[in-house]
Image (cartoon, rainbow, N blue to C red):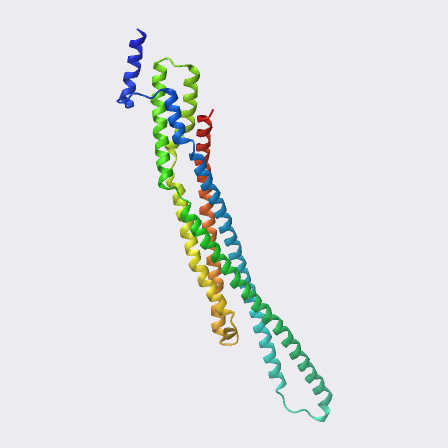
Length: 309
């Protein structure tokens, strides 16, 4: 009667699961699952470490890009102060162009002349200081843009390589299949009245590892792609910004056409802001990849722990 009951139990199960192959023995099924699933956790851990490194790298890129933008804005403000000083000097020169004084105006003329000389000398000193500050800020902007470009180069390389390779995908497929084999083995073991402790262990492994079925590793790769593209764009923008900033701060441009210098500085500041944005976007993608890898590693860790209990 008991044998008939087992036959009646397994018959409907065969309509749901394939019963063409004989289920593995419990110990063999567990060993098979351990072989295919146990090392996946280490793979995800390594990928998470690389994503964290890349987040730090692109985070630095975002910070130095912001620094370049701020330096550019400060430079623009300094250049405006220089323009104002030049305007003031020209006004003084215009005021000095007056008719020759009479004898009665002698002292007033001397006082006015001394005031003009003193004011011009003072303005020249301020102008020199401001010009040096402007040049220093321009050099700082150029250096920070070059650093931002370097971080984007590193970020692109890391992101492009921090993806699930074919070996890991094959391992995941084999792990999922081995857990399904374990489920079949568990059903057969119950029919055969296996030790409850063995059945419980099999249940624990199945519960811990079957979440691999819902894990979308494509999200890991899509975040890596997003980070790589953003950093790649950042390379182009940062390189253009570095070249433009260096040109804007060269002596030939600073001592030449004022309009050209102003246009180059404006372009440099816009490119600095663009480089900052692209680095920031790459940082967001890297952070999202870490979040996805956290989920994957959690599944892998709980599966590995259940297999080794």
